[in-house]
Image 1 (tube, rainbow, N blue to C red):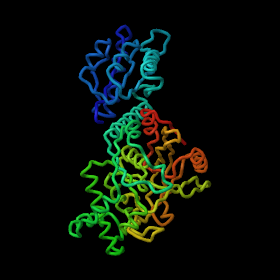
Image 2 (cartoon, one colour):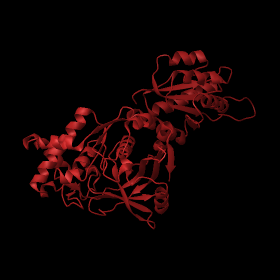
Image 3 (cartoon, helix red, strand yellow):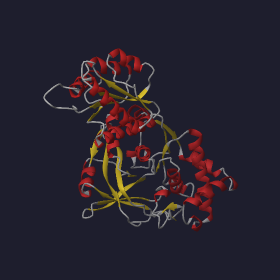
Image 4 (cartoon, rainbow, N blue to C red):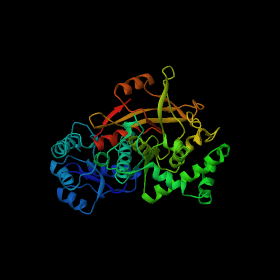
Length: 446
């Protein structure tokens, strides 16, 4: 994370301190097993003054407040007074129920803290974790929240580029710079596609030799394309890479048709494919929210993601096939074929990617959707990616969903979701839900 994770264990000295110290030590051990960068005080903080002194030099991106014992609302008020960052309220199980003394009373402390958070921030404006340090679910919840918070921090430093405008009828991908900044903390930059086309045309063959050599190592069959298209691809690839590097672009949404076919003569699909493989999420058809969805999936899965249309479903198999005409990241290709190169299925011009994607036991379908009223929602579904060959010309991936695929398709169509989705290698639904909560965004989960 860009800022610190600060653990704030609070309590009152009149409770059973041997139990309190034991709970602290076990909690600290769990947190250090999740991430050694988490800051800990070394003891239970037993007064508001101790909390204040501990927090004096901290600049947290996430605060974990834990009632080791009951503590009154003044403790959480001191935290909220100082920081307006994501907050976890971690409540411990009562360690012993034996008809004698109440050792911890962490749960009542949580109610006290939550009541104050509701007064100062609003109800539910925090993450709640309940359980003992040894519980696997507690570790999973804390890990997911920390990963989501890290993603949020990265989003707030992201510069996303819209290269050209969406084609007619594809307005769902358009975005306002102020809206992206307000809701997601993302800076939106805009540039005309012709500027990158003009830059590409200015390069000589020799200037692009290294770029072409790099591309040939990543794909299969590029040499089968017409020489002019190969050279034009290399020029465009160099132009996009320079633009990304010189302007600090972390993700992009690029116009694709008709300009690159009619004005340039070579598609930009394979350029976007290679950028995705280089860790720069790149969506086509100038879908800005699609690109942002790709970026989130990339950060949380630490790998390339697939971007495409839902084009077929099999309710008996409970599968949805996602496809696009040739910009899938080349490192997602099946091992038996590699990242094969072909021609665009409609325009019959190459190079574009032409392969089926590799399988995975775990997958997540995701979309950051914009509702007609201007608010946002996360569509989340989980499942697996099947071992299937290329389904159509272009690139495809077949996802077997945990929930019935027909139910998902029916509901997302009726809810008016956009026709572009991201398929992520890995189950990150938990993390996406935490991120949505931090952003105040609606969750639609299947």
